[in-house]
Image 1 (cartoon, rainbow, N blue to C red):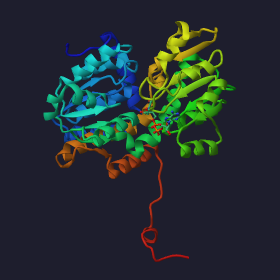
Image 2 (cartoon, rainbow, N blue to C red):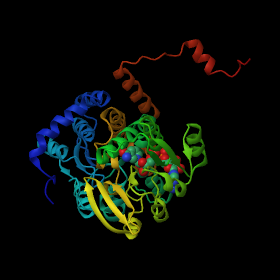
Image 3 (tube, protein in one colour):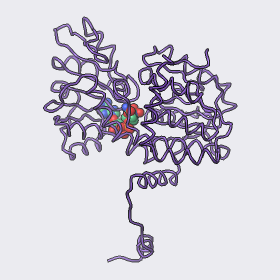
Length: 419
Ligand SMILES: NC(=O)c1ccc[n+]([C@@H]2O[C@H](COP(=O)([O-])OP(=O)(O)OC[C@H]3O[C@@H](n4cnc5c(N)ncnc54)[C@H](O)[C@@H]3O)[C@@H](O)[C@H]2O)c1
C-alpha cells in the first residue's frame, strides 16, 4: 500500500482554506493545541484515527500532531470523506490519509488496514471499526496498543458489548458519553446538519411536509425540533416508553412506523438499530416518499428489501436514488442510506465539533498518562475534563456564569437545614 491514498492532491489548497475556516469556530481545541505545542504530551505516540475526514477532524489531527503524536487517518464511512481536506492533510501537514469519498466497502477496509499498518499505540475510532478489526484480524497489534477512544453512540454500544463478553483487550474512553459531546454534538450538530444534508440533496420545502423522525434519542430530539422549526408536521417513532413520552410532551405525534409510513413525506432514522424502515413500511408508503438515515451505519433502512420491491432504480440527483415500485409508486433513497449529514452535506458545524474533539484530544492525553492503571474496559471521560471543556467553551463565547457563594456551597452540602 502507498504512503497515503487520497482522490486528488490538486484539491489541497482549497482544503486548507476550509480547514482554516473551521478553525475559527474551534477556540477550545485551539487552546489545547497551543498547550500541546509546548508540553508535547503525546510525544512519539503512534495514533491511528478512523474518523469522518472533515475540516473539523483535520483540526483534531493537527492538534494531536502538535502534541507530538505520529498520526495517520482513515475514513470512518465510505461516503463521508471531504477529498480536499484529505489532500490538504497530506500536502501541508504530512499526515498520511487513506480516504476517498465514494470508495467501495472493499477499499474502505483496505484503507482501514493501511492505517493499522502504522502499528498504533492509540486508536481513535468513530464506530469501533478499528477496534473490531484489530480484535478479529490483527491481534498481533494488541502488544503495542495502550488504549483507544470512541466517538459515537453506536461505537460505544459495540465496545461495551465486547467488554461484557470479556473480548476487549485494551481500555477505551467513550468520548460520546461526555456531556460536552452528546448534549451538543448529537443534538444540535446532528439536528442541524441532518436537515442540511436532506435539503442539499433534495431542495424540498420542509414547511407543510409530514416529517417522520425514527428514534427520539439525542440525535432524534435535535432533528425533530429543527424540522418543526422549518414548518414540518413532525411525527416521532420510538421503542422506549420514556423517550416516546418525552416526545409526546414535547408536542410531537408519536406512533408506530407502520402508521407513520402511510403519512410521511420525508423520513429520517437516527436509532443505531437495524431495519427500522423495513419491507412492510415501504409497501405502505406514499408516492414520492423521501427516506434517509443519520444513524451511524447504513443498516437502519432495509435497502435490500427496497431493491426487492422495486422494478428499477436510477440516480435522479446527486445522492437521490429513485426506486420505482411494482405498482408505479416512486420512493427516493438519499445518500445510499448512509449518514446523510456527512454524505450530502459537510457534517456537524465546527462549533460543536470543537467540544467533541476537545474531548478526543484530552482523552488521548489522559490515556497516555493513565493507561497503565486502567483495565480492559470502557471508561467515561473524567468529569473534570468534561467540566473544563464546558468552562472554556463558555469563556470563548463570552458567557459569564454565577459561582456559588460559600454560604450556598455549605447549604447545598448540608442535610440539617430543612423547612
Ligand atoms: N449523523 C451523525 O453525524 C451522528 C452523530 C452522532 C451520533 N450518530 C449516530 O446516531 C445514532 C443515534 O445516536 P443517539 O446518540 O441519538 O443515540 P440514543 O441512544 O440517544 O438514541 C437512539 C434512540 O433510538 C431509539 N430506537 C431504537 N430502536 C428503535 C426503533 N426500532 N424504532 C424507533 N426508535 C428506536 C432508542 O430507544 C433511542 O431512544 C447512533 O447510531 C449514533 O452513533 C450520528
